[in-house]
Image 1 (cartoon, rainbow, N blue to C red):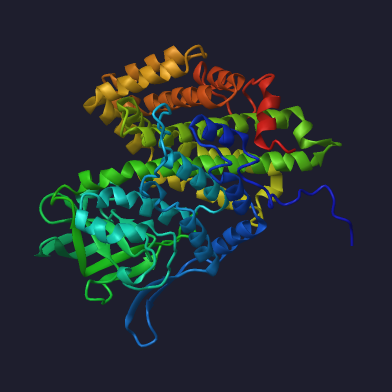
Image 2 (cartoon, rainbow, N blue to C red; image 1 turned 90 degrees about the vertical axis):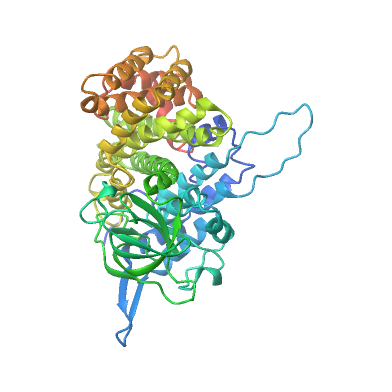
Length: 550
């Protein structure tokens, strides 16, 4: 029997918004008031002990596939722990699945007052950013459902039938036809065994039945969130893929021909199911034109990539908060870890990268709000979405390892949130286009829309003017994208462009000394590993902003 001391209290019962100064600054800079928009109560809900415990349970008791009922009939259902359904219910109630598609809020205007800027994407990004810190698996169906509406807009009849249920704030997990439910979710299935990212290699065949109704025969190698009420998939009618909406139930009320083969045994994202599926003359509605499926689904890809960047920024934030929390409460060699220079240097570097990721992600979300009315913002969202996804998502695994190391052995055991964050980190970099795909997408934009890339470089240079390395970074990007071997230089261009974009975002939302420190150590020179960059006096400011109450 002994007294337990010098151990760290759990990081629960905290307000994940009120304690996050970089988030508050990013919201304010992008015209969102955290108090009036309800984010303080939201941060309290997601920081509660109960919410963290739901995350633990949903990932401990993972989904199970039931292919047949006791009498040998196909069932094709996936069963989840109740904690998963509670998390889904909370996020649906908060609109993570559809809030940007809500009808525009009517605000009274006077003749002198300018219209309030649209902030729907920024507000949703903030909710996603916080929820992903606690449990990222259930965020996957939130992302797919939200993005699906952009593709359904190409099929007005389907949008008419589905949009009211997609907008619903009622989560309904019952296995019923969509028209009998209070709310629905939509999943996706694009890749096949032989193709992966190359969806033109898909072999699933679609045969016209009547009008926009088809029968699909084939398979999908990754079928995300298989208990969704419908799925956007690609299949071939002619030479090129066509987009389809495949419901779980046929219009006559019978279960559709979707036969789940097995669930993927994934590294992370374990609370969320991913299946392999075969289509047995499955009923489907065509979405968009025949042979134009890739162009049709690209409408939603930008939205899913934005979510990848935002959610990964959330993972960085939680890793930083856990590391600083631990260092504040843990003493080693008669001093708190937080007071030891070597640890402070590591934590300050983590805090700086986390601040930059937060600022970049939220400034990008704001460009989605502004794009319909401003050409420069449309260019920003087109060019910087793959850039932000590349940079933030790719940073996450190494970053979270550094944060885990700050906790020592306690960070390596499964009772800590750190292992789950670490396993979660790679998925956003892989899903919706891995690193090379993102880099080549930027190169494609430079080739097909050079005016958009030029506009972005001019804008970022203006926003970050006066900070170290800005003009040289812009020249580096421009030269790399125009190089004779541009594909081989695409990653270099994206890394430089990401650092320039993060510098510009920090120049807008963070204290000037923090933007200057980032530019000096990430833009003007190549960055060193965490703890090896000389941040100087800004170290204290950075650490104070991670958890201001400490």
